[in-house]
Image 1 (spheres, one colour):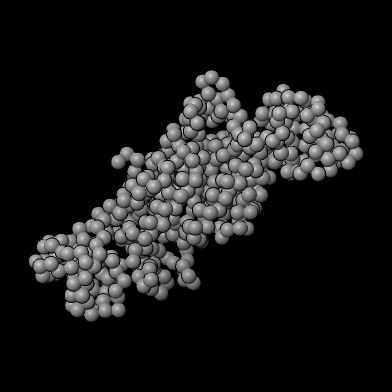
Image 2: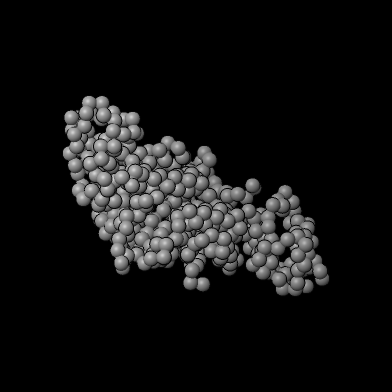
Length: 140
Length: 140
Length: 80
Length: 80
């Protein structure tokens, strides 16, 4: 689908690539959300995260979110890119970019997409601390 | 102020520069709004826009918005960059980037900043069509 | 009948495997499978918050399984 | 007393200039200045939606001007 770019990759995600995909002569605003790895969580220092995914299903769920965003909001294009594997502080696990004629729709669709991704897309992260590791959200 | 980057320039704005400014080991999410020049408005085809500013005051107002965003929302850093001069379809008049520990604050602060900018910062754009030109918003 | 069960995240750690082949009865539901898994792997007994996907789509407890379905055990996700 | 008046956007076009030097009285307010501008430049008569900034800060109608203040006429902004 030419309005949707979905990616799950162990390569470094590219802000410029997501921006370039959604950029469009008819659009007046682009909202981009970039998730970044924080150096701490609650009280502990995080050394690295390891993202694993149920790949084929994750891609389907990401595409579902993208389609739903295009159907629900007045937006033109959407990119949802997610990283797999080991990431360190400052690395980028996820980028979501949305273009729209008007900015309000871009903000809403982008927020919808990242909120949905964190609820339904089968990707898990394990946090590694000095003294151990834990699956995030495992016991909600 | 090291948490605030303000720019009003006739150079091309850089998404990467804004991103790099706000990126921070303590931040978990970055929201970036990029305004882009649309190829039409209402029913007319736009050939180009010309942005002019009351420079010194525009910088003060942009800084005021940035400070207010940092005071109001749980965000770490903010960049507000605006272009001056002639821009064409796809060019970028404005970039606002905000980093935060949690994404909700980044979205809210970014939306606040662009909404405020469009209300208070003394910058004006003239739209050039095939058959004439008009100051945008001049008769609201 | 038999289904393939894929395990992820903490559930893979708890069971110590990433895939299982699991025998089921005709008309067994997702719920039946969950019960059977808990019986076979007692380490799951205190862990019931996972979702289930069948052939890469989320499925509810009353979903009826077929032979050779691929069932994924989906602990609470934490992408992004 | 005298103030410098900066004109922008459509107001600069209507008046045909970007700056004016304008004589004012002691204790003249922003409102007095607006009235005087409308009298001197009748082309502004149908145009009253502008804001005013004094020395680069927005000022209300009751703001009292001083000698050498820099007054900016700010038509509705359209940045972004």
